[in-house]
Image (cartoon, rainbow, N blue to C red; front, side):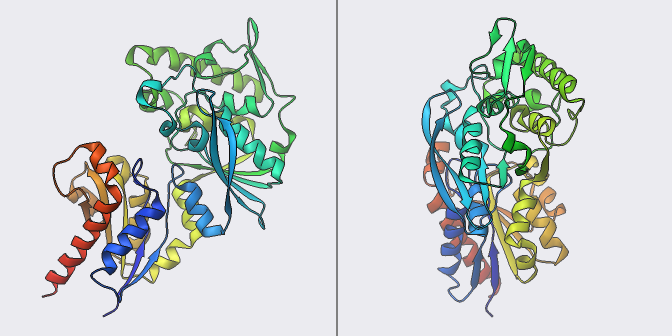
Length: 380
Protein backbone atom coordinates (compact mmCIF):
# COMPACT_ATOMS: atom_id res chain seq x y z
CA UNK A 1 0.00 0.00 0.00
CA UNK A 2 1.19 3.56 -0.67
CA UNK A 3 2.84 5.11 2.38
CA UNK A 4 3.05 8.79 3.32
CA UNK A 5 6.44 9.78 4.75
CA UNK A 6 7.39 13.13 6.29
CA UNK A 7 11.12 13.74 5.83
CA UNK A 8 12.23 16.42 8.30
CA UNK A 9 15.99 16.35 9.00
CA UNK A 10 18.25 18.92 10.61
CA UNK A 11 21.48 19.84 8.85
CA UNK A 12 24.44 17.46 9.09
CA UNK A 13 26.83 20.16 10.25
CA UNK A 14 29.89 20.55 8.04
CA UNK A 15 28.52 18.04 5.54
CA UNK A 16 25.13 19.10 4.15
CA UNK A 17 22.26 21.47 4.73
CA UNK A 18 18.90 20.20 5.91
CA UNK A 19 17.40 20.73 2.45
CA UNK A 20 20.10 18.54 0.86
CA UNK A 21 19.66 15.90 3.57
CA UNK A 22 15.89 15.76 2.96
CA UNK A 23 16.46 15.40 -0.79
CA UNK A 24 18.95 12.53 -0.32
CA UNK A 25 16.66 10.66 2.06
CA UNK A 26 13.79 10.93 -0.40
CA UNK A 27 15.94 9.67 -3.27
CA UNK A 28 17.05 6.66 -1.24
CA UNK A 29 13.53 5.75 -0.12
CA UNK A 30 11.89 6.23 -3.50
CA UNK A 31 14.56 4.20 -5.30
CA UNK A 32 12.92 1.22 -3.55
CA UNK A 33 9.37 2.51 -3.04
CA UNK A 34 8.70 4.85 -5.99
CA UNK A 35 4.98 5.03 -5.19
CA UNK A 36 5.48 6.32 -1.64
CA UNK A 37 4.54 9.95 -1.03
CA UNK A 38 7.47 11.81 0.50
CA UNK A 39 7.00 15.30 1.91
CA UNK A 40 10.27 17.16 2.53
CA UNK A 41 10.36 19.67 5.40
CA UNK A 42 13.86 20.96 6.23
CA UNK A 43 14.03 21.89 9.90
CA UNK A 44 16.55 23.40 12.32
CA UNK A 45 16.94 24.27 15.99
CA UNK A 46 18.05 27.89 15.76
CA UNK A 47 21.54 27.16 14.46
CA UNK A 48 22.79 26.25 11.01
CA UNK A 49 19.89 25.61 8.64
CA UNK A 50 17.45 28.00 10.32
CA UNK A 51 17.59 30.39 7.35
CA UNK A 52 16.81 27.71 4.76
CA UNK A 53 14.07 26.15 6.86
CA UNK A 54 12.22 29.44 7.41
CA UNK A 55 12.62 30.61 3.82
CA UNK A 56 11.22 27.28 2.60
CA UNK A 57 8.17 27.89 4.79
CA UNK A 58 7.67 31.59 4.02
CA UNK A 59 8.73 31.81 0.39
CA UNK A 60 11.38 34.47 0.98
CA UNK A 61 14.71 34.94 -0.79
CA UNK A 62 18.36 35.23 0.17
CA UNK A 63 20.22 38.54 0.27
CA UNK A 64 24.04 38.59 -0.01
CA UNK A 65 25.87 41.13 2.15
CA UNK A 66 29.48 42.14 2.80
CA UNK A 67 30.18 42.15 6.53
CA UNK A 68 32.88 41.31 9.07
CA UNK A 69 33.62 37.74 10.05
CA UNK A 70 34.30 36.92 13.74
CA UNK A 71 37.87 38.26 13.47
CA UNK A 72 37.00 41.44 11.56
CA UNK A 73 37.87 40.26 8.05
CA UNK A 74 35.47 41.21 5.29
CA UNK A 75 33.35 38.37 3.93
CA UNK A 76 30.12 37.61 2.09
CA UNK A 77 27.21 36.43 4.22
CA UNK A 78 23.61 35.66 3.33
CA UNK A 79 20.43 36.48 5.19
CA UNK A 80 16.81 36.02 4.22
CA UNK A 81 13.98 38.41 3.46
CA UNK A 82 10.26 37.80 2.98
CA UNK A 83 9.04 40.90 1.15
CA UNK A 84 5.31 40.63 1.80
CA UNK A 85 5.79 40.14 5.56
CA UNK A 86 8.78 42.49 5.81
CA UNK A 87 10.42 39.63 7.69
CA UNK A 88 14.20 39.25 7.90
CA UNK A 89 15.80 35.94 8.89
CA UNK A 90 19.38 36.07 10.15
CA UNK A 91 21.65 33.35 11.50
CA UNK A 92 24.33 34.43 13.96
CA UNK A 93 26.45 31.69 12.41
CA UNK A 94 26.33 33.39 8.99
CA UNK A 95 28.71 36.19 10.02
CA UNK A 96 29.88 35.17 13.51
CA UNK A 97 29.96 31.39 13.26
CA UNK A 98 32.39 28.65 14.19
CA UNK A 99 32.29 27.31 10.65
CA UNK A 100 33.97 30.53 9.41
CA UNK A 101 37.18 29.83 11.35
CA UNK A 102 39.72 27.05 11.26
CA UNK A 103 40.63 25.40 14.54
CA UNK A 104 43.87 27.40 14.63
CA UNK A 105 41.96 30.66 14.11
CA UNK A 106 39.67 30.27 17.12
CA UNK A 107 40.26 33.33 19.30
CA UNK A 108 37.83 34.06 22.14
CA UNK A 109 39.67 37.28 22.96
CA UNK A 110 39.09 38.82 19.51
CA UNK A 111 36.03 37.02 18.15
CA UNK A 112 33.05 39.37 17.86
CA UNK A 113 29.38 39.37 16.83
CA UNK A 114 29.90 42.68 14.98
CA UNK A 115 29.08 41.12 11.60
CA UNK A 116 25.73 39.86 12.89
CA UNK A 117 24.91 43.41 13.95
CA UNK A 118 25.77 44.58 10.44
CA UNK A 119 23.32 42.06 8.98
CA UNK A 120 20.53 43.29 11.27
CA UNK A 121 21.31 46.90 10.32
CA UNK A 122 21.09 46.02 6.64
CA UNK A 123 17.75 44.29 7.24
CA UNK A 124 16.44 47.39 8.99
CA UNK A 125 17.69 49.55 6.12
CA UNK A 126 15.73 47.35 3.72
CA UNK A 127 12.56 48.01 5.70
CA UNK A 128 12.26 44.90 7.87
CA UNK A 129 9.59 45.22 10.54
CA UNK A 130 10.16 41.76 11.95
CA UNK A 131 13.44 39.90 12.51
CA UNK A 132 14.05 36.26 13.39
CA UNK A 133 17.57 35.90 14.75
CA UNK A 134 18.99 32.38 15.20
CA UNK A 135 21.66 32.16 17.92
CA UNK A 136 23.22 28.76 17.27
CA UNK A 137 26.76 28.06 16.08
CA UNK A 138 28.61 31.21 17.15
CA UNK A 139 32.39 31.40 17.47
CA UNK A 140 32.13 34.11 20.12
CA UNK A 141 32.02 34.67 23.87
CA UNK A 142 31.55 38.43 23.59
CA UNK A 143 28.08 38.60 25.20
CA UNK A 144 26.85 40.46 22.12
CA UNK A 145 28.99 43.59 22.58
CA UNK A 146 30.12 43.37 18.96
CA UNK A 147 26.52 43.15 17.76
CA UNK A 148 25.46 46.22 19.74
CA UNK A 149 28.60 48.10 18.73
CA UNK A 150 27.60 47.67 15.07
CA UNK A 151 24.20 49.13 15.96
CA UNK A 152 25.44 52.28 17.70
CA UNK A 153 26.25 51.35 21.30
CA UNK A 154 29.64 52.58 22.56
CA UNK A 155 31.65 50.65 25.17
CA UNK A 156 34.34 52.28 27.29
CA UNK A 157 37.21 51.15 29.48
CA UNK A 158 39.50 53.38 31.54
CA UNK A 159 41.49 54.35 28.44
CA UNK A 160 38.42 55.48 26.47
CA UNK A 161 36.13 54.01 23.86
CA UNK A 162 36.88 50.45 22.77
CA UNK A 163 37.06 50.43 18.97
CA UNK A 164 36.13 46.81 18.37
CA UNK A 165 34.77 45.27 21.58
CA UNK A 166 35.07 41.49 21.81
CA UNK A 167 35.21 38.66 24.33
CA UNK A 168 38.54 39.69 25.82
CA UNK A 169 37.19 43.15 26.72
CA UNK A 170 34.22 42.17 28.88
CA UNK A 171 36.05 42.40 32.19
CA UNK A 172 37.40 45.90 31.51
CA UNK A 173 34.22 47.63 30.33
CA UNK A 174 33.51 50.49 32.76
CA UNK A 175 30.38 51.87 31.16
CA UNK A 176 28.39 51.90 27.94
CA UNK A 177 26.54 54.59 26.06
CA UNK A 178 23.27 53.33 24.60
CA UNK A 179 21.97 56.77 23.60
CA UNK A 180 23.06 56.29 19.97
CA UNK A 181 21.70 52.74 19.64
CA UNK A 182 19.74 52.39 16.41
CA UNK A 183 16.22 53.53 17.39
CA UNK A 184 14.65 51.02 15.00
CA UNK A 185 15.63 48.27 17.44
CA UNK A 186 12.94 49.62 19.75
CA UNK A 187 10.17 49.21 17.18
CA UNK A 188 11.09 46.11 15.18
CA UNK A 189 9.55 42.82 16.32
CA UNK A 190 12.46 40.51 17.10
CA UNK A 191 12.18 36.80 17.79
CA UNK A 192 15.27 35.03 19.07
CA UNK A 193 15.47 31.40 17.98
CA UNK A 194 17.69 29.62 20.51
CA UNK A 195 18.95 26.06 20.61
CA UNK A 196 20.33 25.79 24.16
CA UNK A 197 18.69 26.85 27.42
CA UNK A 198 21.84 27.39 29.49
CA UNK A 199 22.10 30.34 31.89
CA UNK A 200 24.80 32.96 31.46
CA UNK A 201 27.12 32.01 34.32
CA UNK A 202 28.21 29.08 36.45
CA UNK A 203 28.94 25.41 35.77
CA UNK A 204 26.13 25.23 33.18
CA UNK A 205 26.85 28.65 31.72
CA UNK A 206 28.21 30.02 28.46
CA UNK A 207 31.90 29.72 29.33
CA UNK A 208 31.90 26.47 31.32
CA UNK A 209 29.87 24.47 28.79
CA UNK A 210 30.64 26.04 25.42
CA UNK A 211 33.87 28.00 25.92
CA UNK A 212 36.23 25.21 24.94
CA UNK A 213 34.66 24.71 21.52
CA UNK A 214 35.28 28.42 20.84
CA UNK A 215 38.93 28.31 21.82
CA UNK A 216 38.84 29.01 25.57
CA UNK A 217 41.66 27.01 27.16
CA UNK A 218 41.18 25.38 30.56
CA UNK A 219 43.52 27.87 32.23
CA UNK A 220 41.58 30.78 30.68
CA UNK A 221 38.14 29.72 31.89
CA UNK A 222 38.29 31.77 35.10
CA UNK A 223 39.33 34.91 33.17
CA UNK A 224 36.43 34.72 30.74
CA UNK A 225 33.92 33.72 33.43
CA UNK A 226 34.98 36.70 35.57
CA UNK A 227 34.74 39.02 32.56
CA UNK A 228 31.26 37.74 31.72
CA UNK A 229 30.16 38.21 35.32
CA UNK A 230 31.51 41.76 35.54
CA UNK A 231 29.88 42.72 32.25
CA UNK A 232 26.59 41.23 33.43
CA UNK A 233 26.74 43.41 36.54
CA UNK A 234 27.25 46.46 34.34
CA UNK A 235 24.18 45.58 32.26
CA UNK A 236 22.07 44.91 35.34
CA UNK A 237 23.07 48.28 36.79
CA UNK A 238 22.16 50.00 33.51
CA UNK A 239 18.82 48.29 32.94
CA UNK A 240 17.64 47.28 36.39
CA UNK A 241 16.90 43.81 34.98
CA UNK A 242 18.65 40.58 35.92
CA UNK A 243 18.09 37.84 33.33
CA UNK A 244 21.32 35.93 33.91
CA UNK A 245 19.44 32.74 34.80
CA UNK A 246 16.76 32.96 32.11
CA UNK A 247 16.76 30.07 29.58
CA UNK A 248 18.95 30.94 26.60
CA UNK A 249 20.87 33.77 28.28
CA UNK A 250 24.03 31.69 27.88
CA UNK A 251 23.36 30.97 24.20
CA UNK A 252 25.93 32.15 21.62
CA UNK A 253 28.51 33.07 24.23
CA UNK A 254 26.21 35.27 26.30
CA UNK A 255 24.63 36.97 23.30
CA UNK A 256 21.23 35.84 24.54
CA UNK A 257 21.75 37.68 27.83
CA UNK A 258 22.48 41.01 26.15
CA UNK A 259 19.52 40.68 23.79
CA UNK A 260 17.16 39.91 26.69
CA UNK A 261 18.57 42.80 28.73
CA UNK A 262 18.77 45.61 26.20
CA UNK A 263 15.88 44.89 23.82
CA UNK A 264 12.25 43.88 23.96
CA UNK A 265 12.58 40.48 22.30
CA UNK A 266 10.71 37.18 22.31
CA UNK A 267 12.74 34.05 22.94
CA UNK A 268 11.50 30.85 21.35
CA UNK A 269 13.17 27.49 20.86
CA UNK A 270 14.31 27.32 17.27
CA UNK A 271 12.71 23.98 16.54
CA UNK A 272 9.35 25.10 17.95
CA UNK A 273 9.41 28.28 15.86
CA UNK A 274 10.14 26.39 12.64
CA UNK A 275 7.59 23.70 13.48
CA UNK A 276 4.94 26.44 13.75
CA UNK A 277 5.96 28.13 10.50
CA UNK A 278 5.98 24.86 8.53
CA UNK A 279 2.81 23.34 10.02
CA UNK A 280 4.92 20.36 11.02
CA UNK A 281 2.44 18.88 13.50
CA UNK A 282 -0.39 18.92 10.96
CA UNK A 283 1.81 17.15 8.43
CA UNK A 284 3.09 14.53 10.87
CA UNK A 285 -0.47 13.79 11.98
CA UNK A 286 -1.29 12.65 8.44
CA UNK A 287 1.91 10.61 8.00
CA UNK A 288 2.63 6.90 8.31
CA UNK A 289 6.27 7.50 9.18
CA UNK A 290 8.65 10.36 10.01
CA UNK A 291 12.31 10.30 9.04
CA UNK A 292 14.66 12.84 10.59
CA UNK A 293 18.39 13.06 11.24
CA UNK A 294 21.43 15.14 12.13
CA UNK A 295 25.20 14.89 12.12
CA UNK A 296 25.61 13.47 15.62
CA UNK A 297 23.03 11.92 17.92
CA UNK A 298 24.02 12.09 21.59
CA UNK A 299 22.33 12.84 24.89
CA UNK A 300 22.07 16.52 23.92
CA UNK A 301 20.14 15.48 20.81
CA UNK A 302 17.61 13.63 22.93
CA UNK A 303 16.99 16.64 25.16
CA UNK A 304 16.04 19.64 23.10
CA UNK A 305 17.42 19.07 19.63
CA UNK A 306 15.50 18.29 16.42
CA UNK A 307 15.11 14.48 16.80
CA UNK A 308 13.56 14.94 20.24
CA UNK A 309 11.24 17.69 19.00
CA UNK A 310 10.10 15.49 16.12
CA UNK A 311 9.52 12.49 18.38
CA UNK A 312 7.42 14.50 20.85
CA UNK A 313 5.03 15.49 18.06
CA UNK A 314 4.96 12.05 16.41
CA UNK A 315 4.40 10.22 19.70
CA UNK A 316 1.08 12.00 20.19
CA UNK A 317 -0.18 10.50 16.92
CA UNK A 318 1.52 7.08 17.18
CA UNK A 319 3.68 7.79 14.14
CA UNK A 320 7.03 5.93 14.15
CA UNK A 321 10.22 8.00 13.98
CA UNK A 322 13.43 6.95 12.24
CA UNK A 323 16.63 8.93 12.85
CA UNK A 324 19.67 8.91 10.56
CA UNK A 325 22.95 10.09 12.08
CA UNK A 326 26.50 10.57 10.94
CA UNK A 327 27.67 9.52 14.41
CA UNK A 328 25.72 7.81 17.20
CA UNK A 329 26.73 8.31 20.84
CA UNK A 330 23.52 7.22 22.56
CA UNK A 331 22.00 3.89 23.49
CA UNK A 332 19.06 2.76 21.36
CA UNK A 333 17.12 1.91 24.52
CA UNK A 334 17.42 5.49 25.72
CA UNK A 335 16.20 6.78 22.37
CA UNK A 336 13.22 4.41 22.39
CA UNK A 337 12.16 5.81 25.77
CA UNK A 338 11.85 9.17 24.03
CA UNK A 339 9.62 7.82 21.26
CA UNK A 340 12.27 7.20 18.60
CA UNK A 341 11.83 3.83 16.89
CA UNK A 342 15.39 3.43 15.64
CA UNK A 343 18.62 5.38 15.12
CA UNK A 344 20.59 4.37 12.03
CA UNK A 345 24.21 5.42 11.38
CA UNK A 346 24.88 6.40 7.79
CA UNK A 347 28.57 5.42 7.80
CA UNK A 348 28.86 1.98 6.20
CA UNK A 349 32.43 1.12 7.18
CA UNK A 350 35.64 2.38 8.80
CA UNK A 351 36.61 5.84 7.51
CA UNK A 352 38.04 9.12 8.74
CA UNK A 353 35.76 11.88 9.99
CA UNK A 354 36.77 14.06 7.03
CA UNK A 355 35.91 11.33 4.53
CA UNK A 356 32.57 10.70 6.23
CA UNK A 357 31.69 14.41 6.12
CA UNK A 358 32.84 14.80 2.51
CA UNK A 359 30.77 11.80 1.48
CA UNK A 360 27.84 12.67 3.74
CA UNK A 361 25.18 13.16 1.04
CA UNK A 362 25.91 9.89 -0.77
CA UNK A 363 26.21 7.99 2.54
CA UNK A 364 22.83 9.32 3.67
CA UNK A 365 21.16 8.35 0.41
CA UNK A 366 22.68 4.87 0.57
CA UNK A 367 21.60 4.44 4.20
CA UNK A 368 18.05 5.45 3.25
CA UNK A 369 18.07 2.87 0.47
CA UNK A 370 19.32 0.16 2.86
CA UNK A 371 16.57 1.06 5.31
CA UNK A 372 13.97 0.73 2.55
CA UNK A 373 15.30 -2.72 1.60
CA UNK A 374 15.10 -3.77 5.27
CA UNK A 375 11.43 -2.81 5.23
CA UNK A 376 10.93 -4.95 2.12
CA UNK A 377 12.60 -7.96 3.78
CA UNK A 378 10.67 -7.50 7.01
CA UNK A 379 7.38 -7.88 5.12
CA UNK A 380 8.36 -11.09 3.33
